[in-house]
Image (cartoon, rainbow, N blue to C red; front, side, top):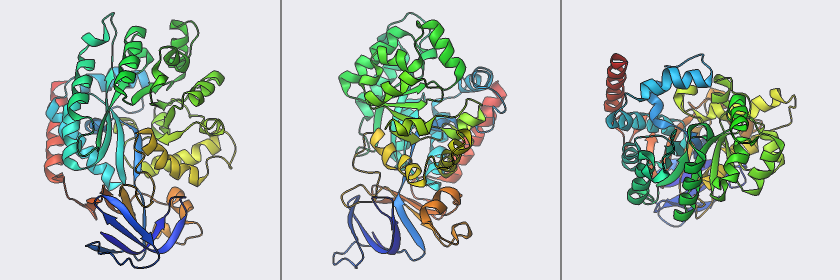
Length: 429
């Protein structure tokens, strides 16, 4: 495909007008001001449009689409124990499959080309990812409340089997990560074993960390004063390439560890605000040169996958929380939602608009009312865009969403199946 006369957000996240961008074999093959001599097949008239790298959702639970709006106005532990866990206990593989497809469709609608997921029903999610054409780093979370060995646990057996069968499936679009749900849902023995196993197979690792103040205090009470970051570090978790979700309640030594171990923090501002968990100290993370990406979390605590909303909250909440209007500038936000997230997934071949990178790209309509006038295109993207401006999403050069149409998902069937699942589960509770 050849994009003609289009505005781009280049590798440095700076806008350039009237460009040509050629896509070949899933890669960005040409970027220039002149029409390329090479033939790229179908052309796209880019006048009044913006082409940029697709967004990476760095922390999500995609099959939780079924729970959108189900557990409202509750603190985290009540939300989990009284609403979420009982509902999830009734879910089947088919429920998870169709719910994942619904989440993928919503992600594509809002320009998300890759997601880092943590959830059960791994094979159902893997099937949906491979069939739909998106990118995903999938981890089945470790949960253990007994003295069992890791290798006896069903969650380990599922994760190991998934890694053997699906890691790098779909021409590398699906990567299987290892995952630890959190300090408070596992044991030191199994956490250490998972860290060692993950290191052995050279997988990425994904874990919830310091989401609430109570979580941190309870961890200290259980583990000789260690915070969750210190505890996980002692057990070897951060010897792996790790995405640590939330990190709302960090202490001074935690910042030192996260920097030293090159951990990426996935900040989820809307979810953390909705569950009254607090605000991640992103300015301090950035000051310490710790990589920060952006996640939506699941729709049960967001309640959508419109990552542009999270990007706006990410840009705004720290200004108010820390009484400093100069923190988290728009380029930091754009980088967190694109290149930083891609690198955290281990995808060095994407995340920016550059020749030789994978064509994981989105197109926005700059003629939308919300994008006029333009003093700074980057400012408009973060502070004015609503998501309705996104008209096309492609992954590996393949158009998966185009002006309301999904090329790989039967959206009517998916919506029907999800509604059917919801009614059945509610009837069983």
